[in-house]
Length: 484
Image (cartoon, rainbow, N blue to C red; front, side, top):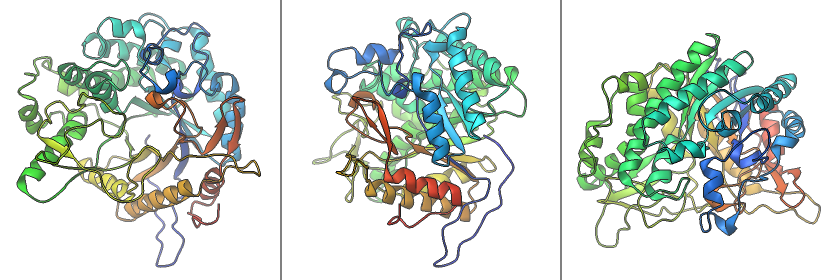
């Protein structure tokens, strides 16, 4: 996601919070959450099709079979983006729509859908930002072992090359993986995400092979696309805070930081895993699946770094009255998504919470941006996801008023602007999400969209937050949160 460094506007006391002229104002989605059409154009099942059709895995047994039917309504959705003043849109490609078995040639019908989508975006002056993998592994690859198997990384590189060859002439901004932490630790550790396995060693193996896949996929993209194109990764790096400054609590925070952040940014940014990660996981694994050269492969130079942020974590050493590891807000499970963190307790932080039960703390976004400004100096940053779920409902006038989301966006975007003012090279913000959609194991019960979707009719209704965000996008400044 590289582009010329924008100039930075400064705002004095009482002045509007303004953003650089080249700043990208976008929204984000993912394929399985919005597309539907799961059996059209040669598409075969992904792990999320299988998971959501397994009784007890999702709220109410809901699935993404129809989702919000973006596959058939994409032209109207792009027109709505243009109406809302977006100049960028982050979407993901469905791997089983393009390469149904995860092996072999691409299905042109699948690629053609994304060609049409990209052409529609470009015709409306909206920059596409393409994510190759947002959790929809072809089911046949999972049956062959999934991400804990090394071969899956090589299959991903082949898939990346196919998509790069097809769309690299018109898409300049590419993201290899979205939130590999969730793929590894929620998919194979706690089991609250597809494929629903609960094996801590498999989770660690998956994490390593996702790192390898990122490196191999980056190389494949660069061999298949024009040199001008940008390749990035989107990490949901955690903001981990110790409950106290006691050495035991600081050590607990370091363990969770290693398992949340270092396990991915270590290889990707620095070509090495943290030594303390090996110490924490030594009772589980000897990491013998890390082969010579793997870390060099994972450490491909990036053109940008995407960061997804929702809420911080507050941790301490475990003890009486201190709850043990949990699924970090993504679901409830008897299994820990944190292999090697049995001595860590997670704590509920006070204050406002979203419908997900996640604390609202915009300062965490500033902290994250400044951390990676130090961690990867000179690397452009993008907020590739940030948003909140609230209980949105149409009022008597048919409109959807969501003042809580407006306040949330205003506060978090203010922290982005503060980080820019302090030297962070943040070049864009992608609100999660454009549309209400299938929210993974929560089914359709949690609404993150700035556009309300009436699920029985699939009608789209922009919420008041969408109008507020449109004004911010058009002016490059943040309106008062009280004036949508």
